[in-house]
Amino acid sequence: MKCCLCKSWIEEESHAWKGGHNPYPIKEKGRCCGICNNELVVPTRLVLSLGISMDNAKEIMLELPKEA
Image (cartoon, rainbow, N blue to C red):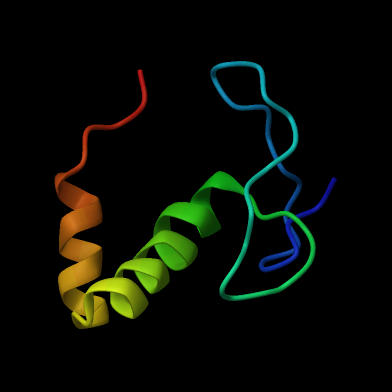
């Protein structure tokens, strides 16, 4: 399956999930890869829900622990 945002193939996650991520609010339909989820989708959700800047949202994402 390809990412609906960047068109790259969606890789299997470390926990064996192969279905990608929900791309909302960037796109209504499709699935996105982990990179687009972490770099675009989740920061956009933070901006919309918390009213912070995209730069602040990306800083928050950098502070989160990486997957093992």
